[in-house]
Every structure is written in structure tokens, then in C-alpha cells.
Image (cartoon, rainbow, N blue to C red):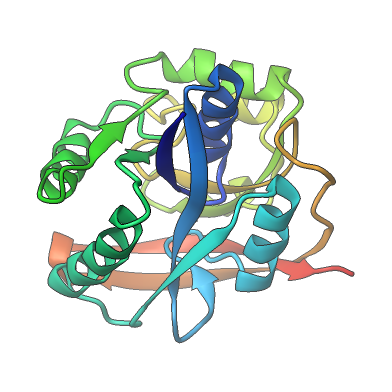
Length: 231
């Protein structure tokens, strides 16, 4: 089989994309790679604790590569760190990178441009599939996910901490993508067909954080739901 690394965010799109890849048996997923905030030890953008990420990937059974990014990271530093990872893994015969992107052309073009420098091909198993159908498939397969972050530009505090189910999808305001592909919300998957066992956690408090992304000329507020590791 073709050897690949999988861009793993811990969320539902990653989980569904990985499920499809493992089911089709065309690729051997050698590693899951995740970027984390080095200062806070949390998954980038999602805010999930490193300890829960580790339990999640252990349950999946694929080795995890953690890219620990500085708290204030420039795009150039990010690219350099990712490139270093790829150069190292390229030596192991890994020629493919798999991601759960759905329809954002700029993200796709960026990935392809960066990977092509190392002669690595980008694989997108969910590409151009209707978001509504994808989330229905995700729920139908028995995956379970909780919303860990919402962008207040699109959703209010009441949406964070909810389970991704039919009621959640039905309650989304008009214009919000059912998969949150535009950054409306992020999730943490804790059970489903790719896991050996569920990931146990307690739901903690909700937190509001105002963030500035200088690289993208964007400032906004986000609601996070704290997930606490449960033994």
C-alpha cells in the first residue's frame, strides 16, 4: 500500500476522512500529525488538551506526531516546522498527505503548493462532497463528537458543548455550513468505528476568548468548552 501521513485535528471531518481511507485500504497511514500550542498544550484552534489527543490517537492505534507551535506563530515559522517534519518522514518512503478538507479552494491550493516542494501528493477523501450528506454519514456510522469551539461571528455560546447530532444540525442558523468548514465550529470525536474504545472526559466550564490572527488580518471572539481528562 501507499504510505501516507494524515493531518489529524481530532474533529469530525478528520475522523470521517480517516474512516474512509482505512476502509478503502489503498493507503497505509503511518502517522497522524497534529499541531498544538506549545504554551498551553492544546490542539491548535480546537483548544482540546494534549492528554485527550493522546488518548484519542492511542484508541485509533496509529502513531502520533505532535508539532508544538509557539503561542505567537508566524506563517513562515509554521511552514518551516511542517517542512522539517515532512523532510524527515519522506526518508521513510512517505509520499502522500491526507486531509479532511471539503471545499475551501485556497486551503487545497496551499496544501498542494507546500507539499509539491517535496514531491508529496495531497489526498482529500471528502473533497467536494455535500457537507450535509457528510455530517449525516458521520452520525449514521455511529461517531460521537462534542462541539469544543464556536466562532461568535456565526454561533452563540449555546452551541458550544453540544453533541453533534440531528438536533444540533437542525438548529444551525441559515448560512452556517453543517460541517463548520468555514471555521464556524470545531469538534472533538470521542467514539466511533475507528476507535478501539471511547475516550472518557468530563465537560468543564465554557470560556470566552478574544483572539487576533495577524497573519490573516482577522480578529474575533470564540467560545470554548473545556474538556477534562477522565481516568
